[in-house]
Image (cartoon, rainbow, N blue to C red):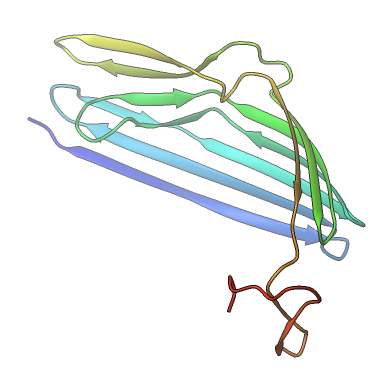
Length: 171
């Protein structure tokens, strides 16, 4: 019987430009997996992602891309899992009380299939597909409001109570 070896190496970087108003981040990963007998398989892949956000006033605009991603299913079962690429665009606005977000993800992808598992051995082969909402087109709308309560901290770090009734939550 053979052994199992799994190793992932990669790099991550972030650039902040225009006084931090434009932020770009990227990542690359290279997973390697060796499965000994009875699977006797070696897998190597390159996964990468890129995110960019632009902040102006209370607004932000973002774009994200995640490449096809492959990795070992789990130890000693010979599975190699592949996930489809995903991408999205978003716009948001916020202040000290409100946050509003609109996002569209995978606008050109209409398949529900988001992953596949494959395993090959000299005794039998296995192929399995996964279905879900992860890589299908969707629109996300969100809004949240933060209520002011409890003790607030001033810039000089001295706690004080805001107008209104006291709160036992933060005492």
